[in-house]
Length: 362
Image 1 (tube, rainbow, N blue to C red):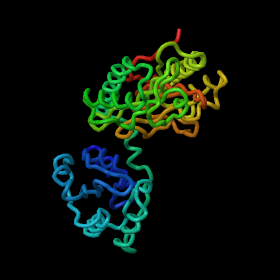
Image 2 (tube, helix red, strand yellow; image 1 turned 90 degrees about the vertical axis):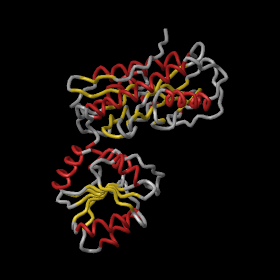
Image 3 (tube, helix red, strand yellow; image 1 turned 180 degrees about the horizontal axis):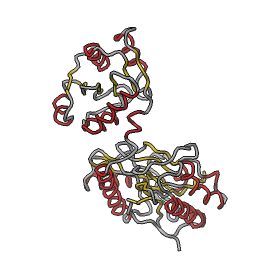
Image 4 (spheres, rainbow, N blue to C red; image 1 turned 120 degrees about the horizontal axis):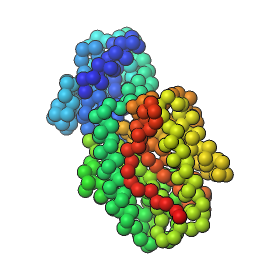
């Protein structure tokens, strides 16, 4: 990933840093292409150290051959003890004095180890979301990979949605969706698949269980494939048989909110303005308090990354970012409706990548 390394080196130079330690797994993958396993919060597949003239992937002998194959342009350092002890050993050998660290992605114990091992002669400098911010604007190659993940997701959804019947269990539908994604080329899901039926559809992050599908109720399906290291995100609300009266009322409101957002989104408006495009529709329909989350988020090597389509984000949305648009209405005791597409923000609008069919209520 030479271009990404060049950009990172420019940014750490601007901050007056001699080196940076990357501990965030997604940032490690973004910079190196190495797919070593991590088990949060305290089992890491490796760290990365970057200076003006060296790029080192620190890992264990279990992963070192994989790292050498995947991380082109990186030295691979086999740790003997802990990763952070190895980091400190390398940084000491390099003779650095100001070292950046990812303060949002480091354990307290690891920071303490670096502090103790490096001593008073080395200053540890928090860099916040430095590398995360690099990931916001996608290259054409990244967009192609995301589009492929979306294609796999769309096809898996349409295959399985057509087979859902009353009496099916949520967990069984979720398994069929994940199996279909893998059969179509995904390395796995980009997040745990959600199938939320009836009252469970009022829970945006419901975990599928043994509840059986009933005719006429909302079924919120939220799913995404991971392909070539990049994520997709798709939500559709479906039903079996004839939709009940509340679903007939709420579903068109959410669909109008989605369509309004997709008609008005473009690069340059703020995240708050983007969020308002859909929120205003839902508020005018009298359901403003039932839309409790933001309109959307970025998608890339993680399914949730920048930028945020949120009423708290006053920053302009950059061209080239890939974002979700996912308005929803949630009614405790009854259920909910959420519909979600993914698109690329461009100067004149948003180019929608999602192709999965949406239901309509006549």
